[in-house]
Length: 452
Image (cartoon, rainbow, N blue to C red; front, side, top):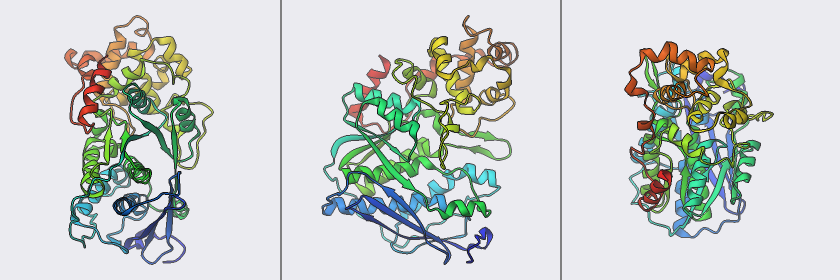
């Protein structure tokens, strides 16, 4: 293949090799298209050197290979070739099935936007017999808790703090916003490094396919590797019940922007870790039984992070960030977080967080209509279900401090008459329900804490 990246000429995507230097904590993940140049990604886990004994060394190697395979999604998508090759090790049927689930579903939005159909197209070669069940390693009781700078992870961190669970606040990459938010917790922190192969950005300029990848499960795999290296037994995320529901696209069906934050991915990845990597490595989302509105209510209980948190996606970019303001005020995330918090916060507090009242701005009508699934589908963003947005807006329409704001007044006049009153009640959406992987002893205490 010439130096020019020719997307449609690529026949095979190769997982070339992976390796970890325990003395430095640096892992190398190597990929290639056909016989083209090697694409080398690095992942860095602070705390080296790591002393790895027999069983833990084997578990780290299994996890490293799984990370290699999952992180490859960033590169595979550049050409989506017909063939997948694994050059330096073999995988069994369980591993291939997990990867096909992640690639097909995690690239759902990518495929939709690029006019591709990946169902039945992605096949990982099976060349190994199933491994025996993974042993328990005697890992320490301690949680690596993912922080993204938004309200959800902060709710988890404060819940674990209240329940006396030992935790390290963990994030990947160089975001100043996340670092500042992590520092605000006052807890131990861990900043993991991930450097993508630089050629990928050049390939994008030369016409590679580009788009959304299942980044949450990539980050989950990085954190699982870090947990094994550091000898701790829990990797905790803060994905709520609403993450399992996608956008309904006419003629296409459901496309979930945040599939790798959803229950199907959490269950498959978490079960795989316990059966194939380490029996005592727990992966779970602390907030899975909560709706986005229930999470917002929990966040509103305290104001410790009002001046520090941000869920605005315009502030988070793979090639850097522009954190001059923590809220742009015009993206779907800003719209949704404002709307979700409004029923549970005083108006002055919420307006002071965002710097303005988003619900009194007629220019924002289309953005809020999409959240309500009124004349549009739910945005391709990590936002709650349409019924949550409708219930929140209905609650505000009943309150004197909000009902005269432009978008609330319009909802009451134009949209609410088209909806059944029962489906606009907010209380049923605040119930704890649905499947989750929170360890049973912790769940009993967590449920009492959330209900307090």
